[in-house]
Image (cartoon, rainbow, N blue to C red; front, side, top):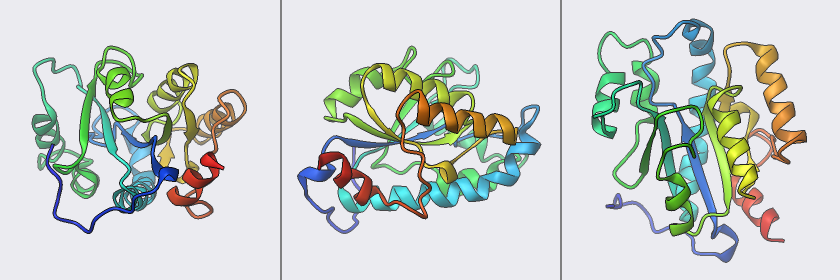
Length: 203
C-alpha cells in the first residue's frame, strides 16, 4: 500500500486500534429505491469525507467495504470505473468519495462486511478493535456489518449523519437498534469528532 504525500499524521496511543469503514458508497445507485436514497447522499458524503480527513490526520486507516454487484471477477478499479460511468446516477457522489492509494478496499459478496471477506483477518493485522461505520444502507449493509462487529466485540461509532436508508422510519429504527442492541454511539459528526470519540474510548 502506498501513502499519499500528505502531512504526517499525529501519533498517539488514543488513536491506535481505530478504523474507519466506508460501506457501499462506491455505488452506481441504479437499483430500485435508489431515487429515495440519492437525495440523502450529499449529506452522507460530506460527513464521511470529514471523518476521512480526520482519520488521515490521526493516522487512522480508512477501509472501503464494498459490494461486488454480482461481478465475481471484479476488483476495486473496475468497481469504481463502473460506478463513475456517464450513465451511473451516483457518479457525482462516487467521484467525491472514491478511494485513494492509501486506503484499503475490501470487496464483499453479501450484506455484511465480515461475511466471506478478508475483513476479519485484515482488522486484527491493522490492530483495529474500534470501528467507525459510515455508508449505506443504514438498515441493511451498515446494520449487518455492525451486528457482526458487535459479536466480535468491536466498539462502534455509527454517526447518524454519515449513514442513510431508503425509508426514513427504517433508518430511524436501525439507528435505535444500533444504539440499544449493539451499544453503538450514534452521535452525528456535528457533535463529535474522530479525535474525541477515540480519546473517550481510551479513557
